[in-house]
Image (cartoon, rainbow, N blue to C red; front, side):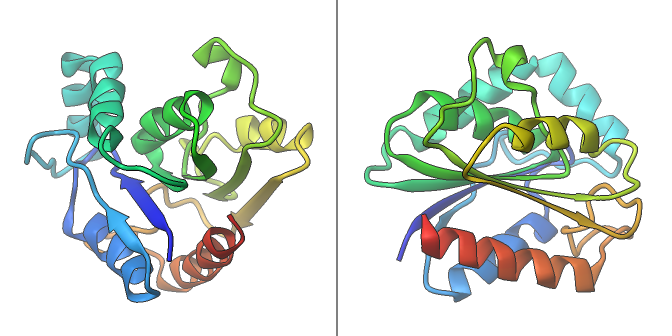
Length: 187
């Protein structure tokens, strides 16, 4: 059993993010879903991004750091879209993070002011034609790393793993969950 932390996307800790976390929990893992928006959810991605911008992306990331302070042992972090911001920042700086899963987004390590740690495993998932999925950044990130996987799914949906949103893609999400569970088991 592993400790897994799932950081939500810009629309907040939606029922669909909780559902994704529950699928990991059903496999026997302790899964944490910190709410970086203090209970707020947004009907559109644009509204959620506007809230994050007003709150400050640094503050959103800091809330993620505070959310994992009490967790000990090895962690696997999962970030969905905006959730990659705290997931990557924590993974790159905190001892005990054994892997990070990035879904529909990537922050280039240079933007975080440091290189990707050589021993930090990463798995990246995105829809091939998602204009907001950072596919090129994902390719660049995994290109120079030994412990890196990139999975591209057919389609253009951004938040394809959130079953509470119209862009949900069940087949792609099922495959993603299988791959994430294998990753968690290995790390």
